[in-house]
Amino acid sequence: AVATLINGWWQTDEMRHALALAEPKLVVADASRAERIAAACLDCRIVALPVERPVAEAIAPLLGAEADLPQVAPEDDATILFTSGSTGAAKGAVSTHRAVTTGVYAYAIGLLTLLGIKEMNGEPPVNPPKTLVNVPLFHVTGEVPVLLNSFVIGRTMVLMPKWDAGEALKLIEQEKVTYFVGVPTMSLELMTHPDRDKYDLSSLTDIAAGGAPRPVAHVARLEQAFTGAQPALGYGLTETNAVGCGNFWSNYHDKPASAGRPHKPIVELVILGEDDRHLPVGERGEIAIRSAANIRGYWRDEEATRAAFTADGYFRTGDIGYLDEDDYLFIVDRKKDIIIRGGENIA
Image 1: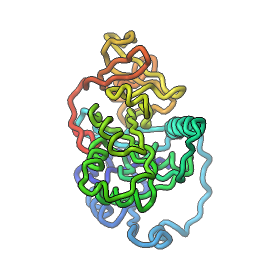
Image 2 (image 1 turned 90 degrees about the vertical axis):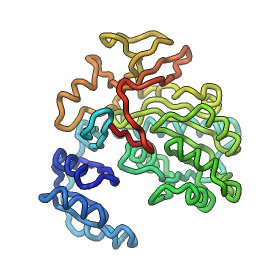
Image 3 (image 1 turned 45 degrees about the horizontal axis):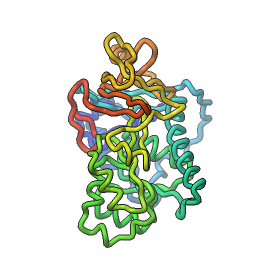
Image 4 (image 1 turned 135 degrees about the vertical axis):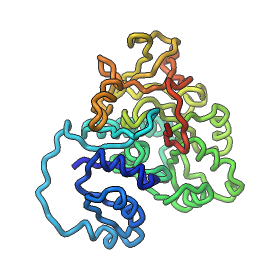
C-alpha cells in the first residue's frame, strides 16, 4: 500500500483533484472529512473513524480482517504527499521506502550528534524527549522529522488539534515538552504571548523552525526569551523528504541569516547556473539537492518529473541562494513567486 496523505484543510473541489489523481482503494478519515471526501469521490471505499473516542473504540472499524502482508522492498513506493509549489493543481510527490527512511535517519543522525555534544560537555538532558505536534501530519515536516523520527528516537508526541499559542505554552509546562518545531510565526507567537512568563518553560531545549524564512532578528530574541532553549532552523522540501540543511545552536547564533550546512552524509547540495553548471562559492543560482531521500518523481506526471531533475540527478528546488566558504547556505529569492501561509505553499 502507498500511504497518501491528504491535506485536512482542503474543501471538496480541492480533494476531488487529489482523489482523482491517486485513485485510492481505501480512505480513512474522521467524520467531517469523510463527508467532504464522499462528496468528491463517489467510488471511494471510506472508513470514518470516531477519532474523539478512546483509541480501541476509534480504530475498531479498521480491525477484524486478517491478511498476509507482502514483503516491502526499498524501491517500492511508500508515500504520496501533495505539493502545490508554484503551479495551480497540487502534484503528488512519490517517495520510495528507501527515500522516506533516509529522510527519517537524516534527522535521527542530527539529533544523535547534538545529544553527543551535550553529553561530551557534561550537560546530558534532564527530561526525556518530548515534542509538541503542532504542525499537520500531512506535511512532510509533520510526517518525517516529527512523527516517524519520534518512533526511531523514542520521543513522546504531545498532540494539539489546532494551533493556539496559549494552549501550546500550557502543554509545554504540563507535559515537560523538550522540542518545539513549527513555522517561524509560531515561535514568535510563543515569545510575544502576554502569558508567557506565567508558565515554566524550562523543559524546552530546542525551538526549531522550517517551512518559511525566519527573520534574522528573531534568533537573538528567542535566545533572550527562552534562556534554556536554543534556536534551530531546517531547510528541506516535500520532494526531499524534508532533508536539506540545518543550522543549530551557536552556529545559528553566528550565522542567523543562513539555512545552515547540508545534512552530511545524506545530502549533496549545489548551486546551479546556466545550463545546470555548478557554481563556485559565493555565486547565486538555483539551489539543487541530490540525495537518496529525494522523491522518485510526481505521480502520473512525467513532464513535471523530467523538469524537476537535472541530468545528474539533482532536484531543482526553485529557490535561489549561494554557499559561503564554510558551506553554509543562504537563501535569497525564489525563481517563481508563491505565497506561503502557515508553511503552506499557495500558487
